[in-house]
Length: 295
Image 1 (cartoon, helix red, strand yellow):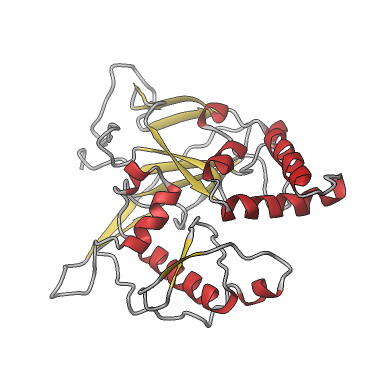
Image 2 (tube, helix red, strand yellow):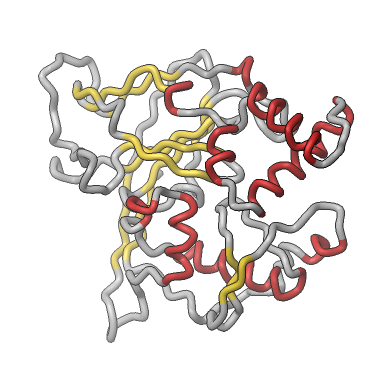
């Protein structure tokens, strides 16, 4: 029990974009497209600018627009051990820049429940202090002040986790968790898999640094996401990469791969996106051999 690994903990800003950097980027985008960046048009320009950055594969610029770890994290301690440097970065169009503690990678310390530091502490576990720069938040209708936190396995993509915690600023939060795990036997007993195909690996390499991407486990929900995007592309010739970023559309039979642009809102092409009847069953998506649940 004591040698069980502490889970991965991913933290994102509840408002993913910095207003100062977004306004500057909108002005540059407006000038390059001969548009007037007045306040009335800014929301529209912001959406089109994000789509343009995605279509030009400008992931670095998307990272720049968001909050960095140095903007938010003040202190990190795990059982009395300083852990501020034990985070890796990931990117989502919905959550912006996110940072994961206790990621399964050879370049970072992987903490178990038995790890103890020399510092006397009142409580065991992970303790983090954050500064939430609300005055820098870009005003979005569906965003709020605070942080979003995910608990997940150490090599699992966090953005589909069901136990998302939203943390309000100005308060101390204590989170306790329980973990259950279901393990299926491999073939010939079941059709479960741990193999990450190239199509999924491509998505991981957009979300994470290429070095970390090779550590991510197979994730069934993301396979179905690929299927849905393949259906959208077959109908619209564009994709809707939310909540994960992807650059390519794959054919429904997985034989082809095409560079794809994102769907633009209020156009005829976007009218067929997210059709729930387009991809109800995708036989090529095998179940995972290990299912972990945190609650």
